[in-house]
Image 1 (spheres, rainbow, N blue to C red):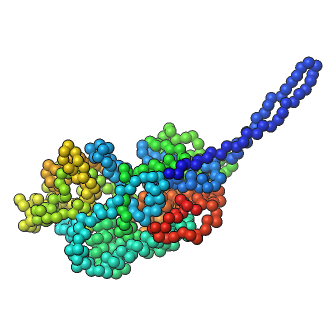
Image 2 (image 1 turned 45 degrees about the vertical axis):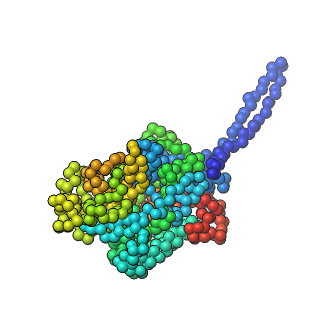
Image 3 (image 1 turned 180 degrees about the horizontal axis):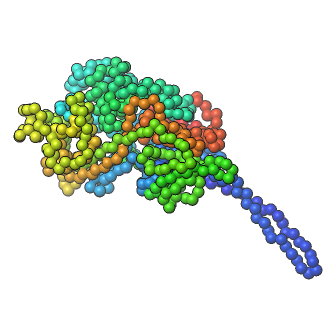
Length: 557
């Protein structure tokens, strides 16, 4: 495991002057020894706001540059929360650490995410492979089950019958093409970019971001029902948005799930290690309310932070903003910086639970009792529903439901197969995570993504009355709203003010936050010292554009 090589620079002490002897009769007089300290120039002071994937990796990239080159830099990292990791946070079932962890937010990364996999390797973390999680899958549109897939030969035949051969093959090729282009960002070939627009143009993505996922895939020859059902299911679970609403680049990203993994014990450990290996001073539970642009005595730009009493009473030469600005609550003073276009965020409800039921009830999805339901239930947009989700909790699980037309698979007066009037389907995904043993019985841990809060009775309707154990709910702004877009927020918002989250409306993942922060740090250091994370003249030769290629720009030079 590499160790931090933060080496503070101290100037040498220089003794100047000497004893000056003067004799007046019998009196001896000596001048004082004068000690002059050549302190040299002060360090470049950088404040990083946000200790999630973007902020922690920014601090790490700065230190990688300090390890290689003679740089006097002081870094302070601030976060209003009491933990490192941003939207990567874990909980324990029943609050019992012996039962392992469950990710509440940023849950997975994939083999193409080279920075995160390299961090896992460098920091000696362990990986949990999630590659086979999707083998038992049901897709549901709110009225009926569209597809059930368990990976067998018969399911493959059904897939071919429903979508043909060319559409799955074409979608896979388009996704691979997108991934291979993005891999250029790990080489000096695409080293720094001044705007997200220029990066998107250089990688050939401008056309993807300018149209919806549905428009992009169908324009490339993928049949519409495959895009709506398969790609749409992926966008709803990954970004809580429909494929006909978000842009084509993130639709393709949603399909790039090869090698899905997570850090055993929680992905947040990567970001803790970034901070640990950065040598930066960390300020948690520290709320910043103001950011003021000022001028120094030498007429240079400086930034002053205000808010919490823990904020140092110093100015900073640069500020790296590594959090969504619009929801930060921070007021800018003395600056005309604009973090536009404005980016909204999806308010997502996450419900973690344990149940004695091995899988969801088939009757809940209009199937015969005893029919197979996958342990991962994905959804796609229902063409017959234009209603909006309701935000209030409903105590009676059937109060906001209506009985569908008669279905012999339903039992009782019809309410067993009832569906919520307000939204179809009434959740984004239901996914099995693991099985735990507690008090002598097996319980199966599931995660539910939805656009509104799900009551205990709703959960019982899905899994069965009397089957529930542990329940944990979390509501937060999980993803940016990602409609087709041609312009993006600035990377450099003002002199000395940098914005890592400028990339979020382009691609929003833990990995791309680390790519964006590396680009910001490269720009900042070039401006301050004339070189970036790697020395000037780093050759573009010897770097590969494949996932298996080991050299990664930033980690290596």
